[in-house]
Image (cartoon, rainbow, N blue to C red; front, top):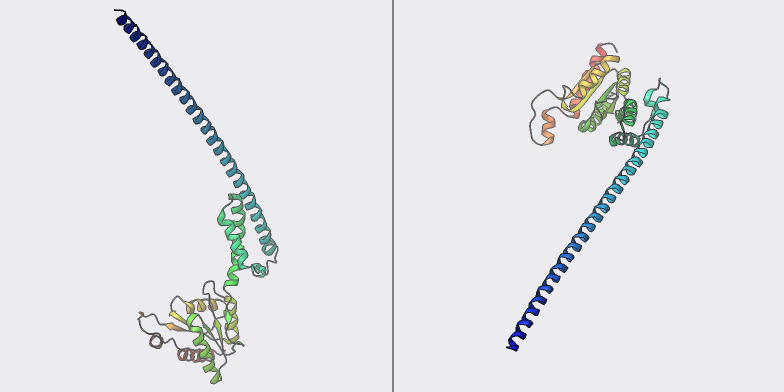
Length: 280
């Protein structure tokens, strides 16, 4: 009987201890979870502060960089403006922008400055000066090239592209006939070199154009329009005579369309006859 009571007492104490231990364990787990949640919240808050600080710093860096770029752009624009004014605005108006002799690399730098678009004010300032600089550059682009050592006195052959070497060949044939022909390489049709064309019209009084192109709306038309305004003279054209094109090998096609040195010679002789009939 005593053993039974002892066993009951032992079981009761064990059960009470087990329940107490379980309760303590649950309290420890709950406390651990609470502490972990606090640590996570603190970590997230700290991370958010770091991210916010980094974003603020990045914005400040970007603003500083943009400020420096804008300042550099304004300085570059001011320098370009000063150089343009020095080379163009202060030049004699009688000589115009031609006397400024702008360098192509300078024009490129100026256009790049505008393209970067640092600010509207700078672009407006450059835009006001750009037309004058563009005129000066066009003057340089349009300059033509006399192909022979001396200019002709009887007739001038004005050629472009593939036809230039045939024009030189035609001039040699004419020379053998006692006709003094000059050759000009018009490498740029727009803008065209009006000065050299007007000079040739005044000195020789007869012009032949040679182009690997339709005679309508090409070099011949441009030359005729130019000299007709200031120094009219016969202008005969060698080129494709407004006909449909064909495909094939080059030499036969040149013969077919009359793009030959001989054709240039014939036109030169015809131009001389027109000049003589006009009493020039």
